[in-house]
Image 1 (tube, one colour):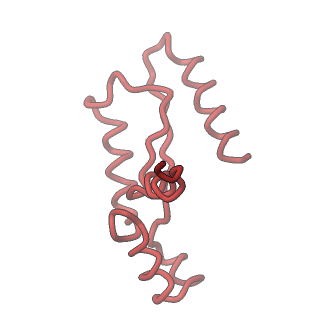
Image 2: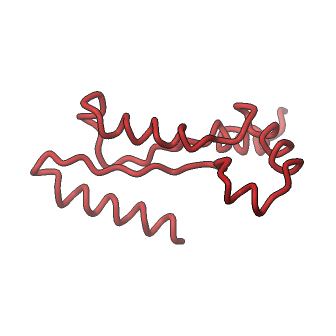
Amino acid sequence: AAKAGLEHLMRTVAGELIGLRVNVNAIAPGWIDTPGEREVFSSQIIESSGSEIPWGRLGLPSDIGKAAVFLCSDDADYITAEVLTVDGGIRLKGFLNHQAPAD
C-alpha cells in the first residue's frame, strides 16, 4: 500500500507541475546490496539470492544512482509521471515463473 501511495503522490505532483515543464518521476529499486543488507542477511543468503535474479546479482547503489542521473538529465526531458524499475529483471522472472502451462 505504501508503494502505491508514493506512486500516486508522484503522479499527482507530476500533474500539478506539468504546465511548468517540471519532470516528476520515481525509481522503484529491487534488492540493493548495501551495508545495511549485509548487517541483516548473511553473505550466503545475499549470494544465493543474487543468483536468483535474472541479471545474476543484487543491485548496487550505483545502479540506482545512474537511474537518478538519467532521470535528471536532458536525455529524460520528455519523461514524466513514470516509475523506473531498477531490479535486474526480478519482475520479469516472476512473470516467467507464473506463466500458464502450455496446452
